[in-house]
Image 1 (tube, rainbow, N blue to C red):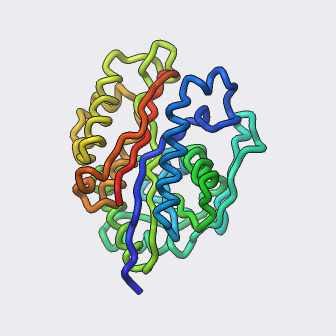
Image 2: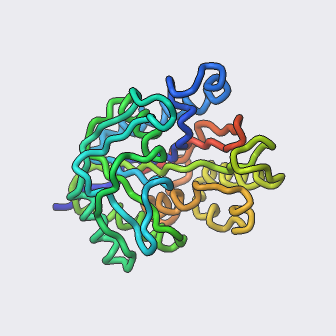
Length: 271
């Protein structure tokens, strides 16, 4: 079977504070633009009519030497560790698609395995909350980065996802989960770095210009100073989109803000 494709890709943040009901209203008010952008991004994905959703999270359990794909028959998790156990998601897993992606990655020389990843981590849970609210109820594949991701391997994994989608005869959507700098303000969770905002600015400009490849050219020292977890996920998106980041005009930054010292970027990346 063939004729499938990745019909939509988006970048979504994974800050639990943007999920309605998780944070107190006074705090949630300061990131309302992000919450609204997450609603819009999720609606965009669901409107594209996917049969399968693939999401990469920087907080999923990692292996030392390769990517992991969830072979679990369900994808379930809640915000209990954030004090709201009654808010969560339960979706069907897609172990057969996970194995197909792993095989396509191995064909490209990238180590990958379909294994149990257990409960959904917050890096996937936050985007999935908005997707379920938008009407998504379908099979969902979770992807975990290796312990030390490389640009080329992340891009190759994205290409493997596109290949598996094409071979499936189905419409797939891809979600890149990632947050920007964690050091934007003196009270930021990872401390303050005066250059952290430069990293966020560079990523926003690259995404808006449909030049995701430019993100990997950011000085590695600046990446470390920013304490980000978005570049690896965007590298996978680059591969999903064919290695050129997608056509100009298909990308749109929906929101960027950093009220609590962490940058939240939400954007449409095309399909």
